[in-house]
Image (cartoon, rainbow, N blue to C red; front, top):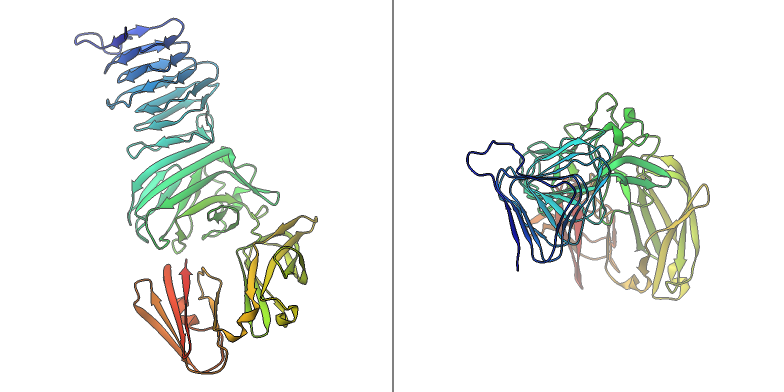
Length: 485
């Protein structure tokens, strides 16, 4: 027989009176249902176990002093005041195979709470005392109606917290989980946000570590919209960094390479919360991962871009770094089959630098190797001998009689990309720049066999988005996609 338990607040009872008190623990088994009505209170100093096949509905107040395990069903609260309170004296673990939908959650446990199951929050998270440590595999999800949690050094969230999609458009956002975007700038549509703090939130590259927090932002809008982005975090997350030299960094998916984000190095050491506010003129692509370090511990970028292309009888290799840490040199390696590589040349690195640097090497007369395709990669070597390899790039040797169109870097930001066009012989050539909808923006005409820096001024003036460069000669045409960030 199915058992149903009701805890209700009848009209006329003293408001705030506990209606249910359990001396040890509660365990739901079989097909039991436990219902706490609006205004009702159930207090258990021990554990609460929602077993397989059972249901817990909390529209009132549920106070738990021990672990909470949900292997059954916890219903989504409909009452705005529905509350789960974790108030134990030893660490409490919330776990199980089921989900835990919450309206409001209060944590008052100096020993802390471990959140090891999928949980959502629709209302207010009140952090009175203790750390809430969230498992990497089960981020706490704050629904669109949830308030921004108020945290302190002794009462905060550790691990991943995600904000479900919220409509922002061109309006203001936040502060929420330490991110603020003033109104104006690009239309970002709906955004999602994940903030990760603690050990999992620390980014370490080349022995250098960031503060113990990063933010990952995604936008539903197309075209890489740009916005001013302000970040705030508790000083407890500084991770030993010098916050008189707070420096912003960003990484794009798959988050293997970091580069300087828009915004100056700033002294934020005088406040807690730390507040990093870039200059008004600095904007950033909103989609990406962001963190803060200092000037003494940059997050080195081994490679921002690497391109290999034919240039007459030679192969030209171009690459760019955004910053370097203990970088001794680059070996450019060549392969005839994509398997066995040998050194084609060496270029010295910058050692330590927080500035962007461009590199170039020419591999002469590549037809001498007698293969239709050559393979190239970079072998980057640190001062201590640590070695890293770039992705492999190819050069088509047999294309000496073909139309060659190249742009580097691509994607590009700021100045336009270096566009080079080489045709087999001199003759009429037209290069037409259009937007993604096919509207003509600029045109270049020549009869030269080789053209360098084609439409550089025009491409440098383009806003963020995708563009097409169509190159046409008497015998052929080619379309190159250009991406502006």
